[in-house]
Image (tube, rainbow, N blue to C red; front, side, top):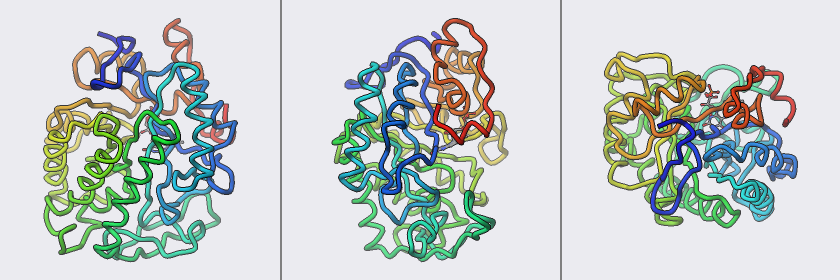
Length: 345
Ligand SMILES: Cc1cc2nc3c(=O)[nH]c(=O)nc-3n(C[C@H](O)[C@H](O)[C@H](O)COP(=O)(O)O)c2cc1C
């Protein structure tokens, strides 16, 4: 078995190979947060991967934390995404939309409003891509607003299907809103959305269920970072919330769980002394995408050793639009450089 072996995700979706394009925020949407023709062409150039996961796409104006990140809540945005999904499908590819809300790492410079989160907390440091702006104190979401947000995720998922996506990946990773509900560092609530592992998992699970109901569990996926590596801190016991969540996800028959990580080389004492990918594989029995610093050899090893079913590749796909052709023909890859982020090649 290699990365070139097709993979049947479920009854409705079969992938041509086991390489997934990781979600990669590029900040090239227009000022109405609508994806452009250039974005459609950028994704179409990469359509030979088994599945593209789109850049994180905001489900609500209040969820924006970076400039020119696309949305999926207006008709114009749905129309913009149609160009992208059509271009990818014409090349024989498949594409999921990553659904995003930044929570407390959103900023009023984009939203004109105070950010919202599980509790009244703030992240420290400067907001990237701004001139020295600091992160702001978030307002706690009322239960009514939490429930409204769950509906917004479901509506965004329906919009994504209308826009031609093959499914959605709920962004539960990287310290954004859903992760903020999962963690003790950011969730201080004592109502039904906080206080213990079951209640901290409730927001994520409600979203997964609402999205599954709206578009089908076979088209619903989630990305998670059990290792807490960005935008929040680990607190002793968080791993129990993740174990609980992963066990619950086992029963929901979703398309896949995807590790959100920059590097899957590290081990963590609190993740049973193993890697974040091993932790997910241990507790989650469905389709699993690993990610974080893989190359073609380590990807093949992981798949052959059944450490993951699929491998997501991020930075090398920014640097090499023709990544699949190159690895098939054993050609050298261009090395990724951050300067490449200034242009869509
Ligand atoms: C420029 C850039 C943008 C990213 N944007 C997102 C994003 O929108 N959503 C997300 O879940 N992860 C995002 N990530 C993380 C990647 O999906 C991936 O986890 C990371 O790049 C590690 O994989 P790699 O070593 O193959 O690059 C981003 C990473 C980079 C470098």
